[in-house]
Image 1 (cartoon, protein in one colour):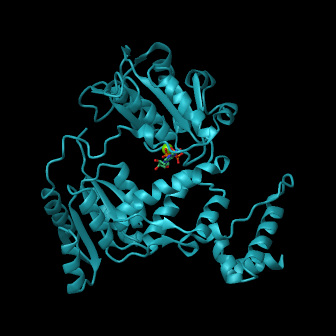
Image 2 (image 1 turned 45 degrees about the vertical axis):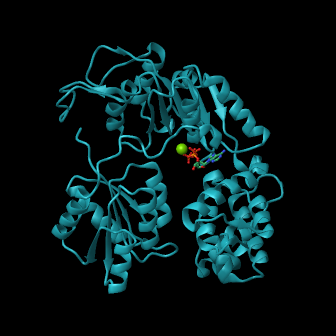
Image 3 (image 1 turned 90 degrees about the vertical axis):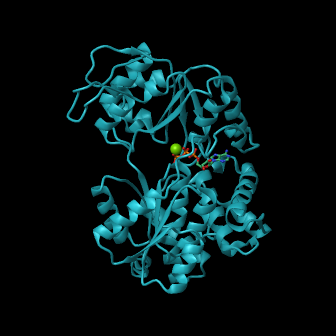
Length: 438
Ligand SMILES: Nc1ncnc2c1ncn2[C@@H]1O[C@H](COP(=O)(O)OP(=O)(O)OP(=O)(O)O)[C@@H](O)[C@H]1O
Ligand SMILES: [Mg+2]
């Protein structure tokens, strides 16, 4: 398959985003969308982007800051600004902050195409050394709690052998971080680590990407190709969101685990491979087995060693350490200095239940660092943290009762300010008034 160039498009206007995306897809580029700078930064961290296309005026953090950030951290990525009615001042600032080219809305398909080709041509040759090194990731598993020590102890025991590992845990708890640290701290760290999101790729594509295919296996299979399993030989394949793998993929995986061989799509014979498999999910595979959407035999093969990454609310003592790490990271990134956090704000961090776990904590601190002056205060934190409501353990409630209780608590917490309450509940005021009447 031809290597497509990855273009990241950032605009808070979803219509513009999709318009640009359609044009670029028609030109056979691979596109990523972000509606905010925050989202864009996350994509940049995880993806090898070849060109950034960004709007300037966006709420929270604007395009100028994104351009500056990319210039500093990813100097090889060219930047193209797309914006409506730019002032001379804006245009100058954009160019000064490192933008390569400027495209004014509305633009034609051809204008976009030419600007993209021109910007991409300025891209310096990709560095042969990856920009982000994954070495030492192990030290990045932050935490002092018994729960996290348990996890690192298991990592210590499994990192140097090829036993299959299954990582479970809620979203944002650090499953991928654990998988990477197993690989990069072990004996086989010089061999590849290949992460595959089983939910992110269409079913038949996933099959050929993982296992490879032989010439003529399907239309477009003009050559025999190796899949990820063979590409990772000697190293690790990380199967993220394993619950999303189709039954066909599951059957092939079972063979990999049982026979230590892969069968390319369209091939009859298997080929020996030597890889460690790490699988992860935040779903419930047992439930899927009951519904016959996940193979029980595969489940037992995958769960030889199981690592459960505990939710953050069960290891709140780790919050200050994690917060410090993110303060340092984002202080460096956005403010060129260490940002502190006041006691009141820290208390809120400790009180909150963090349903989105460490990823949510990281996002909250990232945003607060951007918003604050020198020190993070309560007002730099999102509303949900200020109105954290803990339900007493009073047994199970029906959804209706739960809703009623929750609305009452939010109203109490906001001194019956319906506008504020509606905002926190993320419903409009009319709906809230209806519910109060009810
Ligand atoms: N113990 C930790 N110390 C420091 N950073 C952590 C820790 N755990 C997680 N993180 C960070 O939190 C973020 C989320 O972690 P990760 O992507 O590994 O979670 P996940 O469990 O795979 O989430 P999902 O189920 O949503 O895919 C990452 O930026 C990761 O580096
Ligand atoms: Mg993950």
